Image (cartoon, rainbow over all chains, first blue to last red; front, side):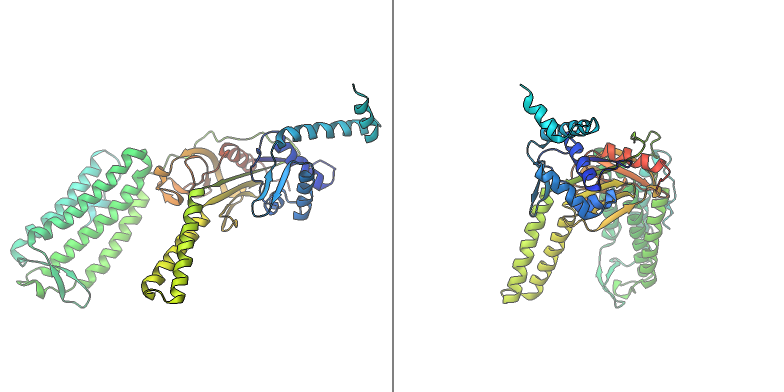
Length: 115
Length: 325
């Protein structure tokens, strides 16, 4: 799998790690059931502290994209590729809204208002 | 006395046959040509200590080494049919030292038996044994030097478009469940043997060997049951086994070029960590391999991982790009 990290990104590093893995899953770099490189390997390759990497991976677990399994390492969850594509779009939407001066609640209200 | 097998450089098609026939002729003809000065049964075996403990009739002393030689030639001639040019370097690497050993041994045997009437009088050719070892080493080195290398580095190495300000990292992993299974079985055998040894169930000597052998097999199979390859700004890192140890690393500057190639276990001599005419190959399954040519080396390093094309491309891009940080 190929991971892309934007060096000019100003977001916190753990978010960048999560974004890179999310993107990799959405682009089909790794499929459901595939094993992710260990946090230690990711940390060495990306030159990011291992705890920061783990924090990013935990965020993805909470989003339902990754599964942490004892003894089998970190694997890509079932149906993660569809979900991650949607996740990326939702995040883009929220970022665009905030750029235009709308809060998250505004966006949620807008979605609720859709019929 | 061993010029026939290492002398000619690999140029024409006649030389392998010519060299093989020449060595056969020397092996079979030398005792026969000197039969008037040799005993009826030349001494052919010494177990240290100077006096011989084995002899053969003259015809057998002529034919056995020649037979061994011809069998070796046959055995090494079968492989190139299946896997093409790749096995050829190994053929010469096998045949040159074999020829050196056989011819050296034959000359030593003849010399030891020369002008004796009974084979018991023949002394052990100590100097001969040392010389044979040295000759075999020289023949092996000469064969290595004169062997044509696998094709030169391909000109069109794949590269990857890396947008400015983006850091790319490539990971790939291959596992061979069969090797893991084999490791588990061997490990189980080792544990059972150890337990039997502790309880004193069977002969300790045999059991100890079985325990040690299966432990080595288990460890070897476990180490090469999976392999991880990683390409980052630090270069290529290949780590083995479930623990990710041992590790081999190359910085981008230490790599001349990288490419992807299809390789089969039959080309490199089986599964696991293989050294062959193609260089070193970590072979876990047939198919795509990431192949690198380390700078200043004549042999490649290859590892069988998926998506090798992009790994090689990223490695080439990192290599050609001046390091930014």
